[in-house]
Length: 193
Image (cartoon, rainbow, N blue to C red; front, side, top):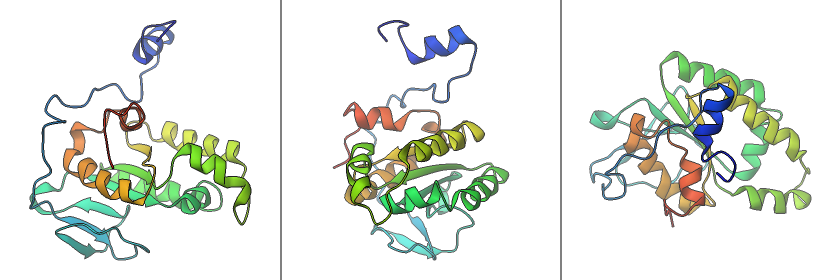
């Protein structure tokens, strides 16, 4: 901001399209999650989150999606800190295939990590296997650029925060796809307790 005014201004100056170029919808902060929003949870989800109106359903990709009249091709792949690091290393090829399946059905995938970047850095030396975090961040950026405007990594900060965030993402659907959700969480404009 100090040198160029905004992220979009930098992108325009260097001639590239920004990954996230939309603000949140005007009614975003006043809109309530519908009480009848049903969330489909993949039958293979290891530690499913608890949602009202949830139902188990085999999903081809992701762990959660809205169903019925709220279905909008938006999916969430939930990751614990360890799952995230494993996906970006040994599970990378499998995850690329999952992204390709999602894109073949014109879907959007949020990868919601139940931690923060700061916690991952702090916890890494104490993990069972210390990870090369530079490599993990590289892989994360690689996926974002391989599938531009089709996925987004969001570090929620914890399991409870993920449980509060996921219905917002699923209900918002395509209106949120090109908004930088992490920016709104980090700037405390999107509060997910």
